[in-house]
Image 1 (cartoon, rainbow, N blue to C red):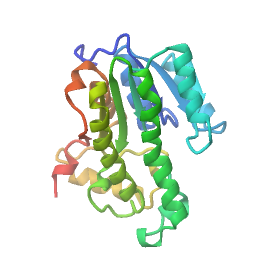
Image 2: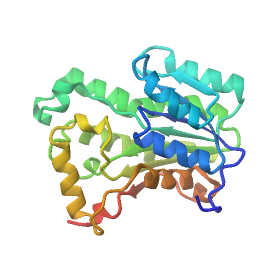
Image 3: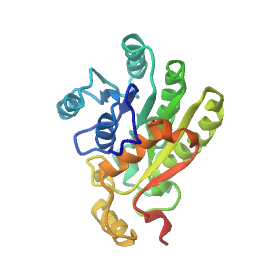
Length: 257
């Protein structure tokens, strides 16, 4: 990590670590290597054994379950941070979900329930986190969420997640305006395609990876650590002049027709 990215003394919450190969884990490692103290969440008891080793390697003292669809769990995370730390400097939201039947169907066949659930978990949860984080960001802060090129263009097999991620990116812009006077900066990181467990739920994802690789200027996929370095910049004081934008961490894929 370049010494210009200094997160020493900063405290951040990372939501969305699924295992050591997830994008959230790559970002968390970059935050930690820059000096940040971290709180980490895991989805449920089934996911905990995969997340605990990551949290231990990060020396995270706050490790809690957080299923945003379970009443009270998200609030409990922020209450623990309030009690233990009294403040929060940055937050990474890296969660998304759609029911399998709806994710694998074309958008026109997506159910109302599936659409609403995908929007709640993948988009509205970020707004909820922003509201809960705000009282803890007394000196300003940074809110980050993970997006994908499918928010801006129709990507084969991305289906319902395209409109949902588009809503997420729009929410970033509105939150950036709402929170500007509080010196809280809001960012969307549009990550390049990465082979993660979560992404593997998309139909023909291997074919998508091959297509992205072939249309990226240097013809290589980004790594979770490369995405994490961008997140670390946005969490640092260096990134505080940026807000409300979609930052592409995709090795230039989005600029190639």
